[in-house]
Length: 242
Image (cartoon, rainbow, N blue to C red):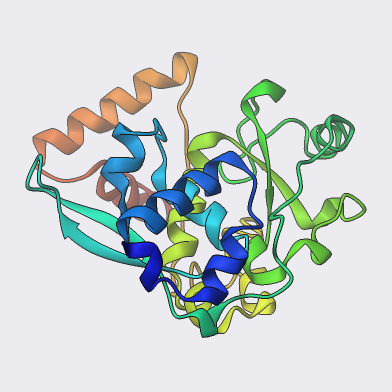
């Protein structure tokens, strides 16, 4: 059985995890040796499997992400298994704590019910609290409710985009330096020097209501030129700015 091959130090930490989502990932890996993104979706109904795996990592339990071929579709998918027990992050059992409604209300008032990445305003129910510097890097001690400046409001789509980008970042994977994260776009989109360690600049734009007509015109232009919408926007801006 795979559980016999799991290091006792890993198993000892796993036994302390009670939250449902990380517990599900852990139990599957203990029984079968690994769990794929496809299995997390089809067997357990998790639409964003990397978030479920991240829950395990937030408990201090190291995971390896590998690329495998789906036996159902033949497509490349992700697979998670326990990593070297020497990579255990101590002091993380219990994972991130749930935020109070009072704290969310305070952040809504502070940030005007806007998604920090796109700058668009949403109904509060569509916004979620996220740590500016990932929990895996700074831990709970730097993210208490007495630190509203250490948090941001994001929609589910922005949170997924941030999560994916952070997990590809070399700093997140290895050094885990909070200062590096603090100068990243995903922490402070209004004042940053890099995006996940790369010299990149970006702008997220949404078209709403009557603005959608403008977007459709840009898309038509892109299709006629056999290029991307982003390329058309960059070209238009270059003309305006000279």
